[in-house]
Image (tube, rainbow over all chains, first blue to last red):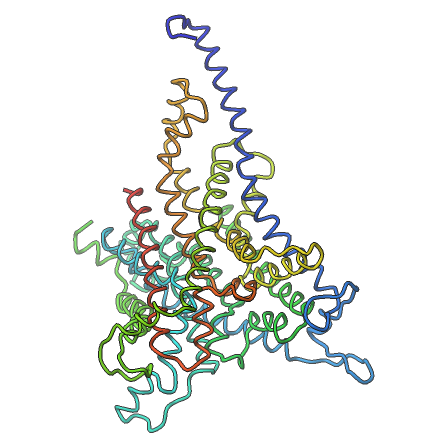
Length: 315
Length: 270
């Protein structure tokens, strides 16, 4: 087909042909998602189904599983089977670790929010050029190696670490305060690890804030505090919820931080699960505990979806 | 906008100090770790003067070499595979009419971001154990590459998809008007415009793979030590500034790739 022969009818024919071509290529295009979906399906989704199956099996003596149905892994969460008379006795060991992890995660989320919100707001109110620098500065720790960052905290709070050395040199204390391998150390490490996870989503929601509304509030004689609580915070609610989830979920399942700063004595759910696959040699129990953690995460995500979709309906 | 009165309206008392405190909290521990990598004494905490010896001994260390080699083999392969998959998927999920299952496909791609890492780690370990047990298959270091590729895909996917959504479609239509085949339109128009997104995604995929500890530690077989695993093995011995030097190298690699990814993304926004 040459341009010379184009009449109005051939033009519309060409347009039709073109639309058809776009449509078929669009249909073919969706197949492009297949490689990613296959890889994640086989090596990401299938393993999750496998641990669902494993959690209903019996532990093999040297790790791994025996193909025999059992609900022991779940019973073990709250009960211990007596080795002599085979009766079930209530035990709170795992429950306590779960509750403690929950508490750690909640405290981490709250303190990160208290520190992160003012930081994100301050960033969002800078001139654009300055804003980019702040974002880069918060982004770098967000992507930096968690193990190394946790090591840095360990380095500072050790008995012969910088805090203790400084306090000893100043004569404030006469023997080092033990901070490493305590709950305090884990809490500090979690705060340090997840602070950028709070700041970045808060910033991206605060950046879009319509500051004319703040002006309007002041025109209506609102005080600074009122503007903060009745205008800024309600408007940034989606960012607050997103930030809280981004901190809460990884903090609940944290592995590296308690492993290093808790010294293997103070466990969190993440370490408990890993332990069943290592020294515990009880894979079904580890799988069951992973699924209980997953259930907690899904509950959190469910509240997120309900909250944000509700927001869309009202807003 | 630059009027001081307007800025004043936006300000909240005390927020500046909290922002500065946050920045200090985030950077001071890491900076101290970096500074002590130059300590000439062999004790980690007593400063005795500046030296580069620890970097020298780290770079001569055989174990460090093999860990660095493993890390690079794994993260470069995982980055290439995941970036290709993510690019194809991003095109397959934006340049199409909505198809049934699109939402589900989106969820599958983002699944690795929603599942806590420790769960992914034990699930992957169980999966490879099952494969080895029933089929007798063991991919060696391929196990780690596959595990890394899975969680790298969503990280590469995000910037590529964002770039595709920002892109002006009229250029592609113009190409189609000028009788470009879909493949030509893609190769000559879409792909060149997509390159910054692909590079930004690849940089992020590389960092998350390079830095990964949890999944690697659980899935790695004997002899498959990566740099984060090497650091972890060293922590449990009496520490020397050598570990600070290696940690500093790791941090600098991350900072380099984050900054590259960030700058590419910024340039696009302008």
